[in-house]
Image (tube, rainbow, N blue to C red; front, side, top):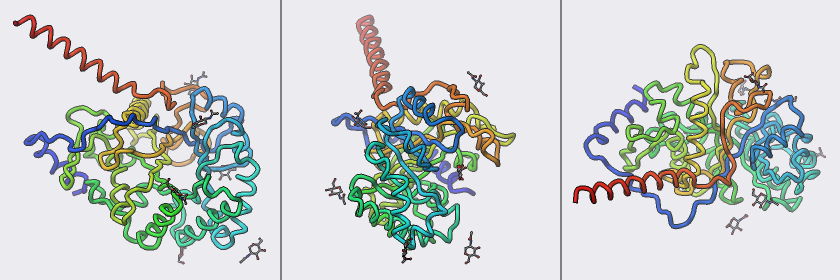
Length: 388
Ligand SMILES: *[C@@H]1O[C@H](CO)[C@@H](O)[C@H](O)[C@H]1NC(C)=O
Ligand SMILES: *[C@@H]1O[C@H](CO)[C@@H](O)[C@H](O)[C@H]1NC(C)=O
Ligand SMILES: *[C@@H]1O[C@H](CO)[C@@H](O)[C@H](O)[C@H]1NC(C)=O
Ligand SMILES: *[C@@H]1O[C@H](CO)[C@@H](O)[C@H](O)[C@H]1NC(C)=O
Ligand SMILES: *[C@@H]1O[C@H](CO)[C@@H](O)[C@H](O)[C@H]1NC(C)=O
Ligand SMILES: *[C@@H]1O[C@H](CO)[C@@H](O)[C@H](O)[C@H]1NC(C)=O
């Protein structure tokens, strides 16, 4: 029996008997800062100029470039678009062995452009555990060399250094309920602990790819609405250990990471979700890869981030979230069909559906709720007067 099943099964009787409310009720004392919703741009065949104008039209302020190509980086000069760069996994061995190699990378990817290009984070490697487990012992030395390289250039306080993991490779499979989540045992002492120590010391963030789509896909007992932020009165699961109520899979996963960090004594390190999204089309077995679900997921995600409620275990929520990805990869991706269809735009740059990732839009949805509440109140008053 899968852990998810147990979690869901256990939570049902509680739900029907006790009607518990979430013990952490939102406090609206300080207005929530607008969430940062950026986007990942992978290899593409569109000119950089066109990419920039597209981003500006979409009012996107944060971009993550997993293939950090100097020409692409240069194109962001004077745009005030913030960049999260990545050093490829294949560079890790040499960068870990020699700081001058780290400086060489910085000299071609950062120094010529900074600060005209707003570079804010450098991820050393991307999902190294999936790429080659053997390299994980070299990761921290590589991260240190990049950080010290930035120090020599006098900008280590301006550009943060970290690495990117994917949720399923870094968190143990038994992450339900979230309060029981831990990092995978074999990497905890050797890799995660020293990494968290480094991140805390340098004010950096933990970067993680969070894909409810993949978890949903491999756990048939999860209702689709729970994965798609359809927050109705039936879509919630209680964490019996903490009494906390979860209303979507994204929060469940994020709080798994928060708990795992907390168990090692680092509950305050900011979290950046480096990838999340939903494919709009897939192969025969990927029946949930549809345009309608992709739109529901992204709209639900942005609405949830804008609500300012954070997650049950982290009031401030995630620091930044990067949607995967800007463009479809038709023709460039092999493997399962859905891999080609994560873009919010088709390859011809037209939108698949309506979306708004700009941070300006503010608390629109909460006001919608206020209006509904007001209308109900007025109706109630009228009824009362009527029956008086
Ligand atoms: C992107 O393109 C570059 C050069 O064309 C190539 O080296 C790199 O492997 C590509 N990355 C991906 C993820 O396809
Ligand atoms: C640049 O972007 C940052 C945040 O993304 C914002 O605070 C700042 O006002 C922007 N600056 C200009 C000149 O637009
Ligand atoms: C590091 O690389 C530089 C230049 O590539 C070289 O001169 C130096 O000897 C190397 N240091 C070590 C410890 O390998
Ligand atoms: C990792 O190291 C082991 C033992 O040295 C080796 O057999 C294996 O091929 C290596 N894996 C990769 C992907 O390099
Ligand atoms: C980390 O942030 C704190 C508070 O914002 C600041 O006081 C401290 O100097 C920062 N440390 C580093 C190494 O940047
Ligand atoms: C862009 O491509 C998509 C999918 O290939 C197609 O449905 C759409 O009509 C195209 N839009 C334009 C404006 O060509």
